[in-house]
Image (cartoon, rainbow, N blue to C red):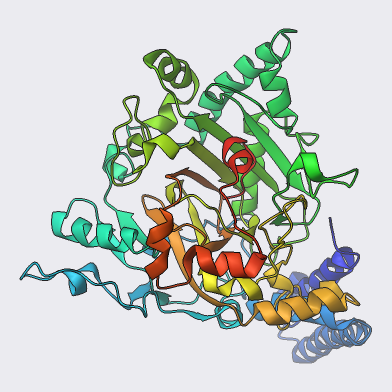
Length: 524
C-alpha cells in the first residue's frame, strides 16, 4: 500500500532533479555565438538568465518544502543527501560478498591446542540495542548510493566447514544454542555450481517446468493439492510439496506471517497469487528490475508493492518420493545436499531427522522484510543467491519486541511492528496518531540484538526461540531446514534465556507449532 504522500514525495524529487539540470547551463547556440563573435556582453546576459532561472526554481522548491509535513521533509532530505552529481539510468547491485567487514572474533580464538573443553562465553554474541543497529544502518537504506556502513562489524563467528578443528568448535556453539555462520560448504560454493546454472535464464527455465506441471495439476478435478497451494490456503499434504506460491504485501515491503484459519473474517496482510504474477518469470523479472532501478532516477520506495515467493519440499521417506521431488526441484536439492536424507542419517545441519520437516525456500526481492518472530525448531538457513540482513534477538528480549502472545491470534509469536517506523528511522512519520504502536516501537528500540549479513554460500544457525527480523538486501534465494527443539533439561543452562524466557514472556508453554512447521507459509 502506497503512502498518501508517496506521489507528492516524488514530485519533490523530480523538482530537485530539474533544479540540478537547470542551474548553471548555457544554451549551445549562445555559446557558439560567443565563441565566434566574442560577444562578452551577451555571455553576461545569458549567464544572468541561467542563474535567474535556477534561482526561481530554487525559490519554488523552497516554498514547496515549507509546505511539507515532517515525514515528507524527511523523505526529501534522504533523497537529497544520497543524490549524486551524475545520474545513470541503471546501477549494478551492491556486491555484498565483497563488502568491507570487520570481525570482532575468529574461530581460531576458540581452538585450544591442548584439546581442553571449549566454553562458549556468556558475552557471545555481543549484543546492542535494536535502535542503535537501525540508526547506524536504516532498514530501508538499500540503494547503490546508500549502501551498508563500511566496515560492517560482524559479531557472529563464521566457521570453515572444511576445517575439522573449527567445526568441532562450531558443534559446541550449536549445543550452547547461540547463533553463528558456516562457509565453504560443498554444494553452496561457487566452484560447485555447473556452468550456466543459477543464472536468470536457468531459473526461469526450471520454474517454467514447475508452472506447466502445476497448471496441469490444477486442471485435474481429482487433484486438490496444487490448487490449494497456489491459492495460499492450508495444505494438508501427506507427501512432498511440489509447488510454490507468490504473495504481495498490503503493507509495502513489510510481510507479516499469518494463519489463515484464524483471520475470522479480517483481511490478510498479504494477497496470494496476485494479478500479474502467475508465472515465475513475471515474479523474477520484477525482482531483478527492483535490483537495477536504483538511485535518484528511481529511488527505492518501501511503500511500493513488493512480492515474496515461497516453496516447500517436504521430508521424503522413500526413493520414489525423492524421485518425484527431483523431477521439479532437483536443481535446489543439488545446492543443499546437506538438508536431505532418505535414510534418516543426521549430519551437522540436520541433526534430528525424526523431527525434521523438510526444506522451505524463500525467494525475495530487494526490501522485502519479514516480521520479527521466533521458531521452536533449531534452524539452519542457507543463502543460495543474493544476500539478506538478519537482526537476531535472544529469547530474553521477548518482552520488548511486541510479540503476539495469544495462540488464537492469526499472527501468534510474531511481532506486528515494522521497525523502520521507529523514531528517527526512514518511515517514522507513517504512524501519525497511533500512540499505542509508537509506544511499542519505542520499547522495541531497547531490545538487545545482533545483526549479520548472510551472503551467498553461507549458512546461518538460528537457535530455538531466537527472534529474527529479516530484510532482503537484493533479489535472493534462500532455503532453510529445522531440527526440532532441544530437550527440556538442556534449557536449564542456556546463556540467553532459552525456553524459560519465552514461557515467562508469553505466559504459557510454547510447544512447537506443528501447523506452522508443516505448511508453506513461513516468512524466513
